[in-house]
Image (cartoon, rainbow, N blue to C red; front, top):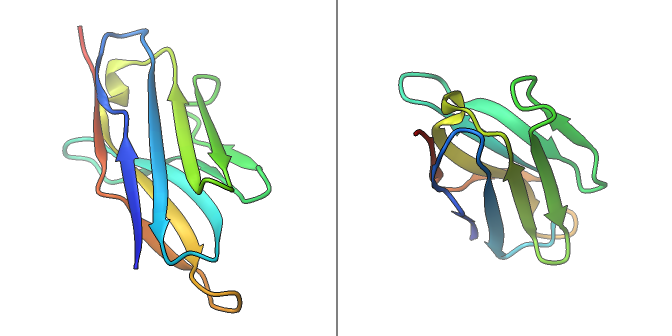
Length: 121
């Protein structure tokens, strides 16, 4: 089994910062892409940022220049540094990863349970 566990959410004022972390555990041989998605109340889940095992990153237009995604392949973690936060960034943030459990297995997609980030004065 594979588990993704997020941490680091909370309440912050507009203009503030939060750092989200996600750790993968379980039977893991390797992890391909890792990323963060978010879902605001009444809206669909949307991509925030993704990072490949080689470090190539992709960001949603809404967060470019404010958010930074990073990963530690040895620790099987992915972080999201969120700066200059806006009220519209309020959402549940979900960690996502494509995990190979054995050397020649296909990659399966896994989700964390989510962590709430609220931006409000």
